[in-house]
Length: 242
Image (cartoon, rainbow, N blue to C red; front, side):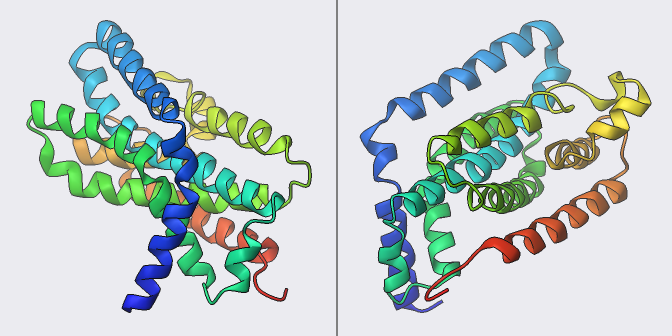
């Protein structure tokens, strides 16, 4: 990556993240949710719940960053037509996407910090590099899925009304904050194909927590999801004179 490309990415990141720093209460809200989940699950589940929570914070944080923050930021800029400024410039789609991602990472970092603290406390920091890779995969699949959905929305009032429920549906209902093995198998096998649940199954495997999916099965599910969302996104995204 050359200096010119780097400067373009930083420029997009700065412009697309202005709303975050103008409204810091969004970050405060995220911190409150993290604190509440930690207290609730620790009180009910003890040390095993804390281990699981360390994984969930990172995966859910990066997933929501992609599905909600990146997708919504792009959706609003498209509807407000401010993204046309970038199209008219020499900025490419990868540079624009990387800029949006970089500008939104503060939310993922807010979730990542408690994961690191918990893993350090439990002397499990060795899993952090693998967890970061899973987080990046969560961000990619989440953002590609979110962009595919947002690009089909014509009414601006529907952006948050669509991505927020999907975010809740993919992080609260599947076995993210609770083990998949607690569910009846027919239900469990249905829910673990959700990308966030598959990511958690892989992370649990790496940490030695009992899971429904094997490591190989989890990777296969995620590979299929990546292929599907890339194909869907290519079909709807347009840039430049298109």
